[in-house]
Image (tube, rainbow, N blue to C red; front, side):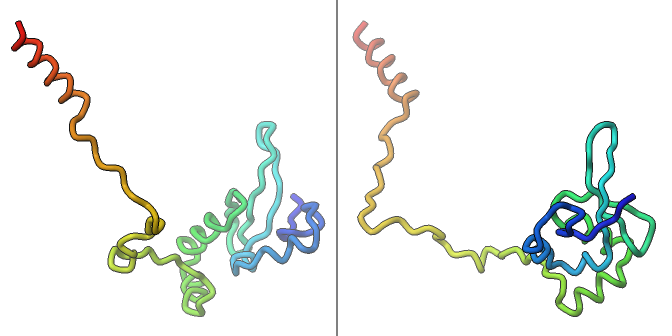
Amino acid sequence: RNYYQPGSAAQGASSSTAANFHSFVWQYFLLYDEDRQGTLRTYAQCMLCPNSIQYTRNTSNMLRHLSSAHNDIYLEAKSKSIVRIRKRKTPAETPAEPNPPPPNFTPTPPRAQTRQQQHQQQQQQQQQQQ
């Protein structure tokens, strides 16, 4: 296997691409390509254990591996605020109207009747005429 750092010349990337790999996980993983059943796939080899994780152009799988298999390292990185975990907004934090309508906007009034109601009314009128 030919291991390489992300964004390296072995991957065929320019030096500016290497600057895009900010995550701390790259301290613990190397990439390699492998042909499996005629499909070339990229894998991330953990340098702390023999496990390889499929690399899908993001660090999610590697973060998940570190948090489950090497939790002490993951927690240390988290305590140093290296790991940014997205916090979901609670309803209280979400604005009531995220996209206010433009100032000259006038909403269209709702239909007085649905088509089904109109159809029923027409049938009743026809029955009364007979």
